[in-house]
Image (cartoon, rainbow, N blue to C red):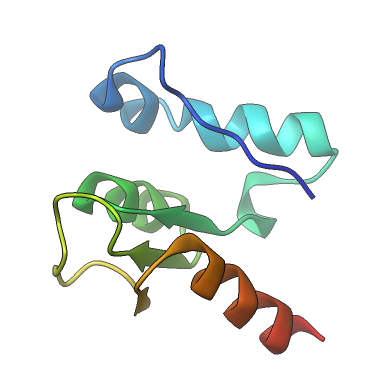
Length: 88
């Protein structure tokens, strides 16, 4: 498991090229299709849709509500707890 962020690149670039997920998947030795995107913006959820993977929205950023995520959580810890409960 790993956590990957892209603070040095413009969000549009990361999402347009799916670069963040591709780099994360490569680093972990998995395919991008086996990833889950946890994000706090509609752009993050666009990335998940573009890759065809689950997108979990967390309300930690300025976008507290939107229609893009499969589920919405108050914070990242809640989203991770959900994943652990779902997977195990």
